[in-house]
Length: 79
Image (cartoon, rainbow, N blue to C red):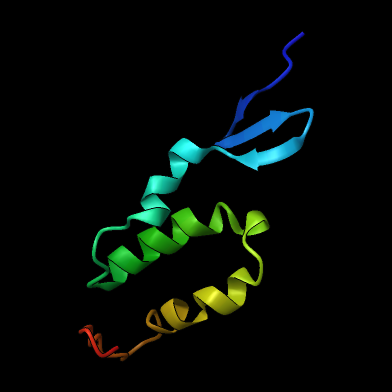
């Protein structure tokens, strides 16, 4: 019998369900988010791990707001 393994990006073991550390680079070191497609891609990856991120919806809200119609993207060091 298998004691632990990776299932759909999650590590399953006696300790329970954990995040597969190898899959976190997309979230930990994302490419610059400069358009709607980039934000959608990042949020798609991040939402996969929402059960492991406390207050995920509150953290993701500012990025989600950028997906609203007629929102201007202004990214600089001050934002």
